[in-house]
Amino acid sequence: MLVRRLGTKWVQPTEEARHAGAHEGPGPDRGWNAAIKDGSLPQIVGKALDALKAEAAYFTSEEGMRTALIFFDMADSSGIPPAAEPFFMGLDAKITFAPVMNADEMRAGVGKAMEAI
Image: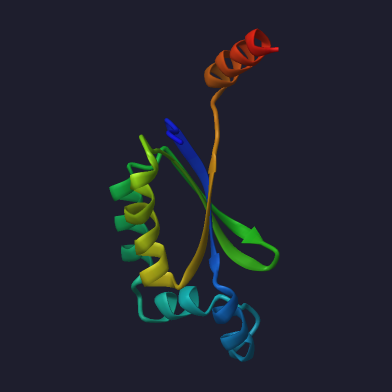
């Protein structure tokens, strides 16, 4: 499946990291915590955002875990490994990709859907 715009990338710790990091304090974000402690977090995230040419990036918490919502264009699914690996390798992250649409794309998609009905 080809998607022009792939967004809402959730970056969260893996299940293994949650269990391993449960004793480390208030958060289960072991990979994030290590990157903060050793000072590498800004470099890891900054380099990844630059490589993705991110349209927007928001940082929040989801279910008590640090979460990044990153919006970027991806021409096809071969872009998944280079988008994901910096977060897997640098932060021991769990990543979910979800295609999103802007308003113009939604209008065009609804128009196509109506034709198909």
